[in-house]
Image (cartoon, rainbow, N blue to C red; front, side, top):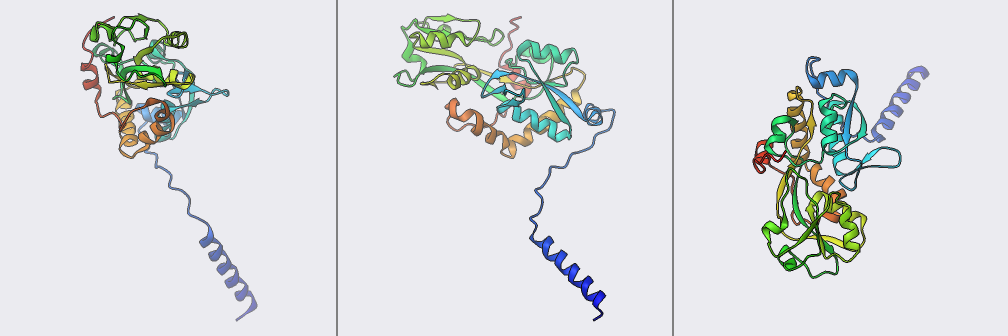
Length: 291
């Protein structure tokens, strides 16, 4: 064999052997391109989108020291940006402030911590619920209180509620006298001052359980409310897209993985599952117009 051809064959053989030793690249989720006249196509053309997230509700959603989001909701927001193949920038906002940013066109997507009602669903462009919250109790770990019935006759119960989806514990258990607060973190002061329990939607109780030492969430579900992502009112196509992304995250197990990582340590929920309520179903849980 001529020396030149021998060298070429040896080089080819070496290249083949090296290539066989290199592990295959991880599968990368294919990004579907959308027409420019769709909301998704416009965002893809821009290459970036702006998302509003709560910044002080760890482990549900918070901003780290570098202004980067982390927590359960941040994982879902990242899923949506990744599915579009866009970069995401984040602003800190929650509640009605986040809804207003969406209405004013300041953000492309928001995760406001506002319980879904019929009025809210009519006035805004919302996704299906990514979380369904329940009003429960936060009590000292050493407490013998296991349910709301164990609090009957007590007056040392701190209560926080969102106005639109308010459920007064004393209406369910008339022998419980609660003190209402306008900021859920005021319940931390009452608990550490000798209060026997705090009651609120579990989103807020998880934050308190994460911030305080020696407290845990207990008790039955005293109310139910869904929480959804919000989009510009005209972006109905984007709401469908977000629902698809969330459905995939739920069905493929990523929603549960995010729950286990961020919320399970404080949520104290047996057999947690991704919500299967649609937007209309969540809205009919709260038909009253409290505004």
